[in-house]
Length: 193
Image (cartoon, rainbow, N blue to C red; front, side, top):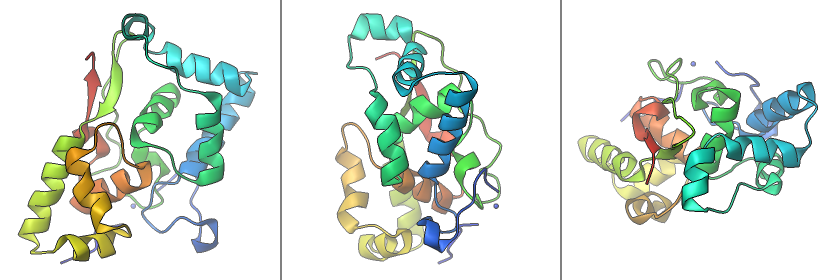
């Protein structure tokens, strides 16, 4: 059994910053969004509208509730966001999630997200993520409890991915992809519903 966290990020933080080595840094993503917001002279409401407009054709058909400015600004305070919301933001700034990990595992960095037109939205395939996690767990002969301890979460957070309808936390999703030694893009697709 090996801990495969390990590679470069946009804004690395030390232990006092609340992000462990190899972890997804949601605050760094927020800071990057804020820089781009200021460069474009936008309010947070306008950023949320621009992020939502990336899938304008799909949105007009589905009638989903748009992403709120508070979802984005809250990420800066909480240090995490849902894995699905993170994709909206990453798409807007054209970055892969691994760009916000201080030391991504070899082979996971520099893999871009799928390209989605205005008729699609980026989505995590949580079923595929769970299947890959469970297969590797079995190969390593780890119990769910031992794997949860290794990934810094609870056993139910991991086993719950199998039945998750919408999302899990982005930090946990990225801990899993990094432990698998795979880019997040392997588990992300363009959805039309």
